[in-house]
Image: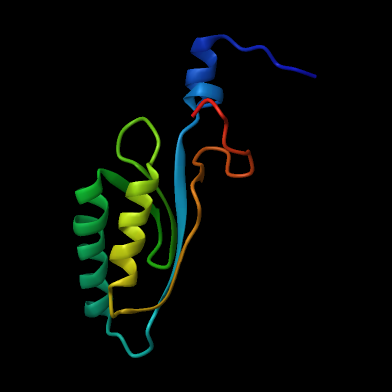
Length: 114
């Protein structure tokens, strides 16, 4: 059954033309890192990868979601920049960066309107 929603409701629900894209990160640190080294990495990550690209990170030290710091969608260029930054770090044994996905409803496909 098709659902007809007003523009205002679509915006409030972040659906259709208001869909917001983000991506997931899955990280594994190398064995033997100290707590201080992990904390230093996370601080660098938030400043150099997130703030520098106008992004926000929600999650823990090994898994989370990256979304735009304001209303809107992460671009493929921003996603690639974060992936490059992470893969250039020696503290990580594994880096998995998902393709762009709906930040609010991850199981929903990306709308053609985005």
